Amino acid sequence: MPVRKSEAPEIGGQGASLSATPSFSRTAWLADILRERILKGIYKPGDRIVEIALQREFDFSNGPVREALHQLVAEGIAERAPWRGVRVAQLTAAEIADLFHLRLALLEYAAELAARNNSSIDRKEALQLKKVLRTALFGVKSGSLQLMNGELLQWVLKVAGNKPLQDTWNRTMLRTRVYVYAAMLRTGAKSEPIQYRIIDAILAGDVETARNTVRELTRQTLIDLGIETSI
Image (cartoon, rainbow, N blue to C red; front, side):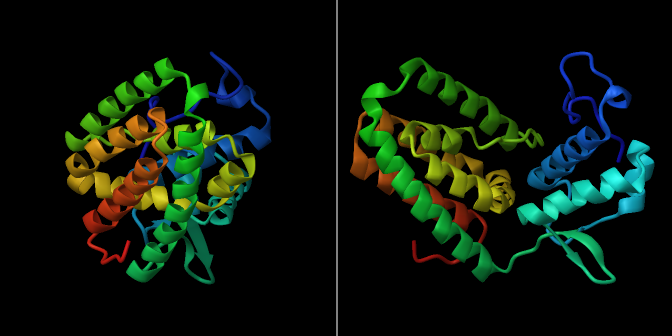
């Protein structure tokens, strides 16, 4: 799979070439590409990521490739097993449900804090977020592999204004994006209005509705994945 310009992030500023960057940047650059492929579903849960194939594709030595894969394993979105190499992490339905219950607990608290902070929210930024979501959701529904970068939830966490909460989210919730994106590909139309209602509830300072709506979004995601839930 050759790397595409739209897929490859820039390194070292505009116009920088990969060959001109320090070796440690190659690891981060490659990890970004592989992470994006996993989150888009190009590499699916259980798929093997072959080191030698990546070396050939990117013309890298084994070092940066192995370090990039190690980073994905550390993030929990890939796993390394003896004699099996590195594979995209594959969770059971029960493990996905447990992870989304944890995700919901963090989101409900974040939504509550965000709604309580509504007086300090930049309204223009919130409106722009809706436009970004519409564009991304349209791309998903039309079959595009455009990556949704979790803009809504990052915005909720930002306006919540709780750094320990955001740090916990960043360390533990990356794996859920694989499944959120898979759900969007199946029935994104059902979750789209829910996402807009989350923004509206936070802007209105409606704590109860904000909490209930993130719960509704989580429930819909699990339903779209075909996972029974008590949420």
